[in-house]
Length: 246
Length: 254
Figure 1 (tube, one colour):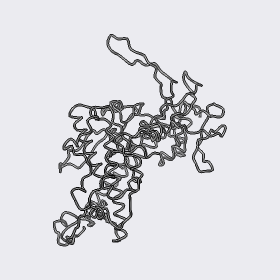
Figure 2 (cartoon, chains in turn yellow, purple; figure 1 turned 90 degrees about the vertical axis):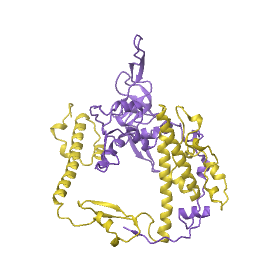
Figure 3 (cartoon, chains in turn yellow, purple; figure 1 turned 30 degrees about the vertical axis):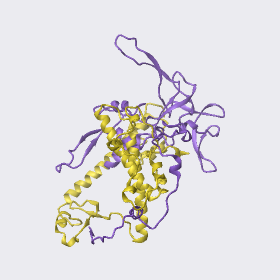
Figure 4 (cartoon, one colour; figure 1 turned 180 degrees about the horizontal axis):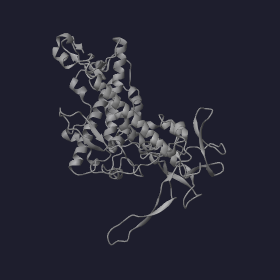
């Protein structure tokens, strides 16, 4: 089973087995049974100055989806502690001129945390869609700024309504018709066009060189990789002719 | 446009390379990254802009190693490598191949390493070249033979298991809808070897030895989710015995 190589939380099993009394709040918040003070920011002593620390992969979304909210909440703090520990160890290794073993562990924890957050958001979104009729995410909308460029504006929560908030209105000028940006828009569009044109030219030139070098080129693969290049057109170009008998 | 440009280099790292290394994509991207110039941070006079090295030369050194790093230093400029585009990659670790060029022409061997970034394979013990490995002053240099990479497109051919001769390969579908490798000459199936599933950390997923830091399989597979009509926060508050009586003042989103 691919499940065998798993991550990160050496104490996850302990957590699942512990049963905390429900009404004592402070007891519930503990995520681990170990208390080593500041030394919890450092790895186990036997992992110091070793060449490699072997660990498995990160948590996948599908594995997190079958866990209860409580488990996810605990796992989050396990991962957070692990990440703090890894970053501390990395910093300390740098200070001691040592090599930090398996730096990809940081990315694995990060990925797990991202996946966990996605799963929690999914669950919350399902609740809000069902109960409130809108997803509980931060709202936003597509607006145009003073330069006529569209962007997605993510809204903020305010205590006073919009018409009273003159300070906000001064700083945010969305969707205002501005007659003075024609020249800018023209140049901006030209810039975008030029980048596109140059990249197409570069691709075409590259394909011509490929055709020159490789007599048995797989044209389907070329078409797939460089979709903008018109191969029928460039086939008879002088640049395409190679040093071989066609 | 800018986004696609930075993604392009990362995409150059072959899928098989990533699979064998068993490393997260983010780590490979991070270790390959070479920043030439960056605007000062937290300075209102500058927009956040980063200029990165775009052109990398891929060799036998893997992208996350120190050797790759030193070869691709910021000042180094290497000549362009032209790579023949390939539609379906059909050479895997553990495949038996026939060599079509060089001193070992006609010999058959097993693929030991696949370097997809350059369309290369390295065949175990074949196509070797003598190399001096130590250059200490006053010492006699040690000489060692090392396998040189071979181009997949023209220098090696897969061996057909039915007649043990080199052949061209096609990808076809079986009646069950499975994509398989088939010899064009005889139409016989060329199975993908089990070595192809090997990664840096384990030979097969079954034989992976759990380390101390790993979560046990049983704990991962256990289903604890119970669907309730609650948000994440509501359920955690209930479990902890937190009650919220305060009523939030009306707010405005804009």
